[in-house]
Length: 245
Image (cartoon, rainbow, N blue to C red; front, side, top):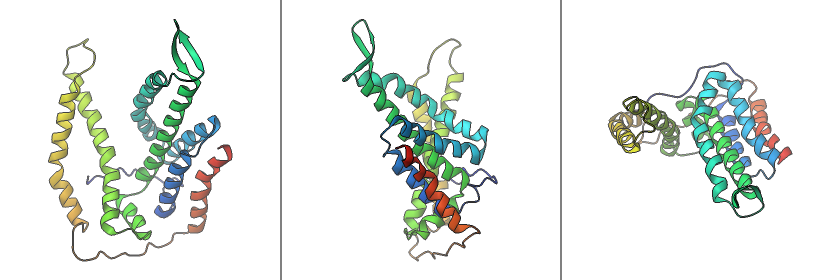
């Protein structure tokens, strides 16, 4: 909770003020649910992913992509099997494997999930926790709510990374040649690790004023050079997806 997922860099997105970043993130999320064509789904998925590669580099962006690839694979394999109503595309022995409607459903889910994930990763990897709090405060969000929102955004990716590390550690203890590994020990270990983080989390919250009776000051954020241009680009980049909606 104390460690930031921020990656130091000098890309154009790093130099953006956090306020246009927040608006751009919200626009990416909203527009991803407005796509009504195959081109629109592909664009909503690929544009924020391309920005992620440009902003944090190939290595870090690829790591982010690898975290979601197993989920995408599960969706591709199983969602069409549940959506067998409609026009059949693939059949085997009279059994409908996939339909046009099923393929469209899985494409829509993957596009939306990917767009949301890449947009959030762009924000978290290019803005420090303190900047996100100040940005939310600039939009008149109460300090406690802004702090809680920023901490949740940090906490969920951290738990996901911790869970993958626990699963990898568990798999190394299995007998050679054995497939898979039990989920319950991994979940138990993750729960214990999360509970042990409570004191550190509480200390981090107290240091930032969470729970204090006194009202936290809302200091204005200075406007950087090209502030208006940043707002313009922050809106135009996600809104450009509407061209292929």
